[in-house]
Length: 495
Image 1 (spheres, one colour):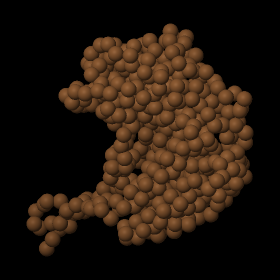
Image 2 (image 1 turned 180 degrees about the vertical axis):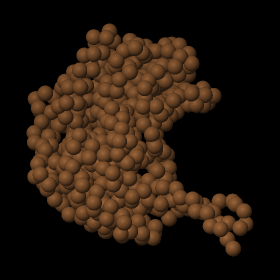
Image 3 (image 1 turned 90 degrees about the vertical axis):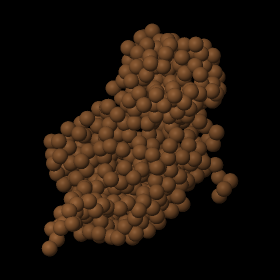
Image 4 (image 1 turned 90 degrees about the horizontal axis):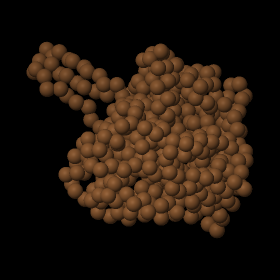
């Protein structure tokens, strides 16, 4: 078995395509399905249940009944912890299945899916499970004739709408803390990559999570997603995806029952390289990976590279050298670093922005061409634009693909101004050997996460989220546990 290639394993892989409602795998109420295309081949991968409002109503009813029965929320934290630890163990045992589905479904290199996505999913569930019985409530300091308690309780029914670029990890970031705190959770995966969410449901049932507590509704945003966001018996909508959709969901939350709404949205992250960078080779290699990793389909992609003018020529030459290492190839080959763009629509979007950059007067210094066209897959060679100005669309708008914009600056103050000249504020980075510059710059950057002399560092202990139109709320860390709870104050008069 160990001698099998990933292609062999893909051929032998079987997987579910139904919705998971109230503990059972079912077809959509309408019987409708939608087709999943393998982006590396352009061929059909599966037909998946297409859920709509009727399915949402069934799932919410089951979720509410489970919550009110306290079959999950009423368990001692240590009991929920044991079940979720078992769940994490099952996810880890099925990491090859998760990696294969992720690669086949959205074009991710199998080495990335095995090296990050699958283990990070298990780790997230495990971390949140272990945190359950380590979060304490409070006793307020009040007069001696009263007892004042500050406690946290589960919100109720949580609907999680998750993206297509890191389908399993982003689902886990929401499932983990929401389940840990006792909520019933309904996941609506992206229609572009729904298969791993369905596997998560299968393993949740095996782990012992009760019926109705965890459910999965594949479908489209304007159908299942909108119905969840408008449903008056959903207590929280949590989302990762585009800013445009996030705004709609916030509006739906307001139109309905003022449900809690946590949005992790887009980014156009600035990556600053100062003239005093200590390791210019490492910085250049990192700048390449920051835009090429996961085909650039990353909300924190370092898509705006700001380089001090005094080192621009040297740095760009090094950058282009390292970009050569990021060539698209078959995602199921172990040494592939760039896979396929998720689908035809995103493929055309990325190519259209490359044309926009050319027409705006930027210089296409590297790549930007369709490649591997003989496969019928959606492959684009990563692109680097130089001579980019801050008024260009490619500098301001999120492309969500492997397109890097290089701009120069003459002072750190100018770099900060350029960096903050954005509707977004998800991530930012600064390379410098001066600690004062690093601290002052990180304080001035309007971003939820700032990387100093690295890109994309962090783990489950660090909160993740953005400023401005990159969203609200935070995933990961104990802060995520708190957002899936209500805070209650109880004042007890003593005799």
